[in-house]
Image 1 (cartoon, rainbow, N blue to C red):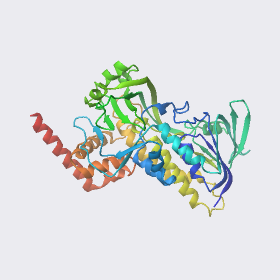
Image 2 (image 1 turned 45 degrees about the vertical axis):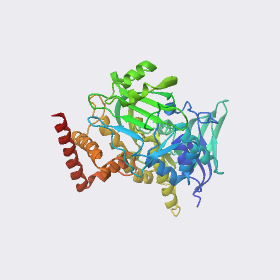
Image 3 (image 1 turned 180 degrees about the horizontal axis):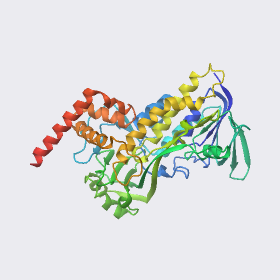
Image 4 (image 1 turned 45 degrees about the horizontal axis):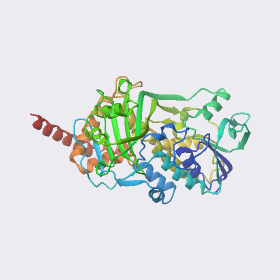
Length: 456
């Protein structure tokens, strides 16, 4: 049942596209405004500079996209994406232990580039007759009613300098930086929302490589995690939809990875394990090494603002921008879209379905964001130079994280649960079960004892 005539979504990235699809059937016309001129083929674009770097669609995100788009996994496969079990064809190296054993865990892991995922989503959205994607348009203003109590339109400018006004009873701000929403708040004389930030100053470097026949990596995915807080150097080798393979590095401050190939390979040799470096010795780079810098994770607490304008919904990165090293952004946006669709479906009987919509959205979405934020905040705050408020239980949480990694090495069920939580299929509260906690502690002690005996 329709609840309005016009909705505008700002941004045609993953957040904006999934949000637009969540509105289908609820508005007569849905307009998506995008600053970039969208590519006609699979390629990175200026508005998503990190799109050239390795991306992982976490299994939780894949599940959400399959909820939004029937048969989405099949569309990805048809476009060339590779899929394997998350416990197989992967070398996952934690500090102080060897790679986790290969186990068939029944968790699907997609390997492809971010531009491919976005392209497949965009094609599905474009099939909806009540959605119009208008690219090459810079949003200049969200227009509110005279008293500021509700949104009524979005103004934008085309690349030719033509000014447009699009009526809107609902505005989804999936612009990424959230500037349209912040601009509306400034224009209304409202204070900026409270923010929680974690300064990480993380540098990324990535290059596409190929391997000669017979020298291909044994694993489709290889990752070495850092030994925090002594080192922040992280490496990944990741298959994608074509014959190219992503090779990526990240590090903080003095651990920033280089941008030329010989030094890139040498830097790989400084990781906690030799497997990635030894694999890259056979690789041939294609193109330049791309670099990207991420200064801080940011969560805007719009939910704390009073008298929120009717019909305004900040979305995805506009609310919460996560450290991309954990691959959570696309999944968080897809989960928000599922929640938004379910919420709209439940409000059809309301006298005014849009009144209080954002507050209701945050009531269901807030706990999900809390969970994702905590999963990335704890390892980030392990570094003394990270800027942000540290919880009182930080050291306890980091100790449990290490114990969990040790236990996963020895036990298939803990291995599966670790990946289910990491991939956002289950919340971290799954570890609150007393029996599971005791099992993890027992297995971790068993691991440490065996290692000490070998070293002795």
